[in-house]
Every structure is written in structure tokens, then in C-alpha cells.
Amino acid sequence: MSERIRRLLRRRLDSELPSLAAVGDWLAMTPQTLRRRLREEGHGFQALKDGLRRDTAIACLAQLELSLLTIANRVGFSEASTFHRAFKKWTGVAPGEYRLTRIAAPAPNPTPTRTSPEPATPALHNASLPWFLPEGS
Image 1 (cartoon, rainbow, N blue to C red):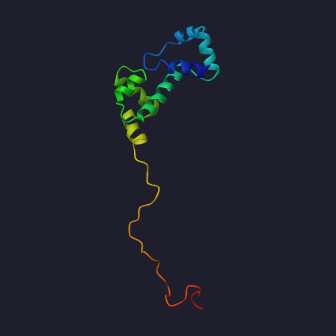
Image 2: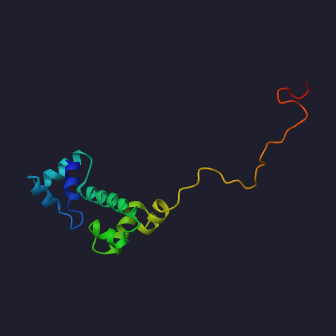
Image 3: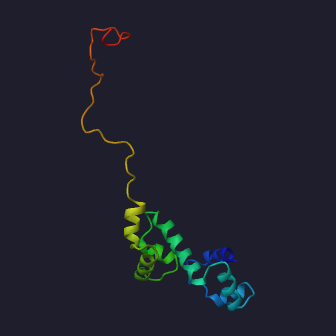
């Protein structure tokens, strides 16, 4: 049931999201029955809406060409400030900060940077010995 509602909400995300009663009408059930079925699955209607908005906003933040206002509109907020507050409530950080620190931040270099040049050839302990004889032979 919750996944079905999520798909239904996703199709209407860029406009005002429908109420519980409207979703109940589309699914031919009362709001009380819909609420009960969601509760049986461990979900709430508002939590489904918020989760969908959050997940979509995070995906949109990865598209660096999109402004925060555009993202806010795409996830159903008419004002950037309202989106900003909601996003901070969902994730603990503002959307711009999230984009900078979690998405747009350059990945750390997995290979360490050398601080001093290494010699081109390894130093030989005893250059007079043939390569096949160990030292002390």
C-alpha cells in the first residue's frame, strides 16, 4: 500500500501534494482505512510525503545546474525558505550546505601524495657483488 501511494504522490510532486482524503478517494477507501493500512505497514501519510520530497530533493541537489528555488518548486514548495526549513528538518543541514559537503565536494584522492621525490633506482648495499650472490658470501 505504501509503495502504491508513493508512486501516486511522485506523479504529483511538482504541484500541491494531495491530502489523505484525496488519496483515499483515488484508492476507493476512507481516510481512516487508508491511515490504518499505512499504520499496519509501519508508515504514516505525512512521513511518506516527507520522505518522497526529501529523496527527490537530494537527487535534484546532485544536478548542480538546478537552483535551490527550482528544486524547491520541483518537490512541491512554493517558497525557497519553506523548502530550506523542511530540508534542514529532514537532514540536519541546509540544502546548499548538503550540496557543497555531500555532493559537490571533490572525492578524496585515494593515492597518497609524495612529499619528497624517490630515487630513480634503489640504492645498492654492495655494488661490487654480482646480483645472484647475497652479501656476506
